[in-house]
Image 1: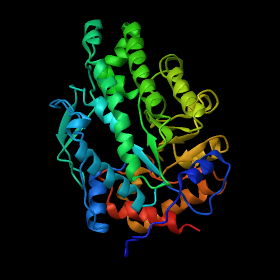
Image 2: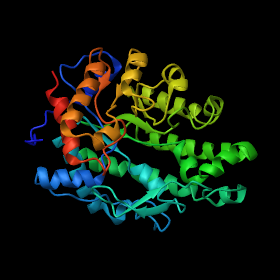
Image 3: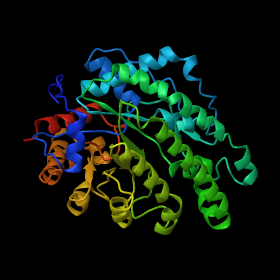
Length: 383
């Protein structure tokens, strides 16, 4: 880009919701993200806007993770972090401030992570990934000694975080509270191999784990959904991969979807939307998500197997669509190619409404800053 746009137009959360539910058509492109990596935030705040940057108070989980300090031990750090985090989203014109603090706290209990050097453009130093083998629970004894009570402690203190965020939140913005159900057993509580074997060998233990995690997430959502600053639940659960879901639709109906229905019902009782981030090919379950849960919008797309343009054409008349700029293309294309690609996405998705623009997943630390700002520039200047 030859010039950085410092005056990003503001959009409000009420319009954001109306566009996604189809009651209003926007005369310009609205955009949203579930996550922007801290390394990206730091560069934009410091180098582009000349602002301070404060890292998150919560360390990333990993095999050497220490217990997360309580809110009272680092209240000032939380205030500094949230002030600048809100500032980042506001400076770029986003109407939704997604907060993943509870997930990060919950995952701090993970003692099974793997790590390696982070080779991204803006490196974290070390990168952690999910447990491919077994997780923390392998038998009933593990289940009984798992520190479930710590999760409830994180729920109890989360309201204090919302109070801090509300101090800095502009009137036009709302918080999207983010929880996750399916990924916690899969990625570290049971582990991938552990989960798939137990699904057949110890189904009662798997059900018990999902019941525990599902109840924790419900308690979390119940504790905060009525907060004035909260605009929606933006639930995040990757249910599949390129060709389909990780487990059968029947198992999803038994283990996962009953909890999704409870979360959606809770949000709707408070007249707030329930959005779902879910990576993976969702073709087989989209009708269930739309008609039975029901979700108000779907997020996470990949051109190779579940492109946003196809999902918009097939389901866009029945549900809101968020994002869609393929992360591989966002990371690799040169500026002209990227601009042409983004214009194609907007042409395909904007015409009939119920669409909010953004990446297909999140703005990761391997996405060039220039490409991220190019994406926003195309959204702002789209005809």
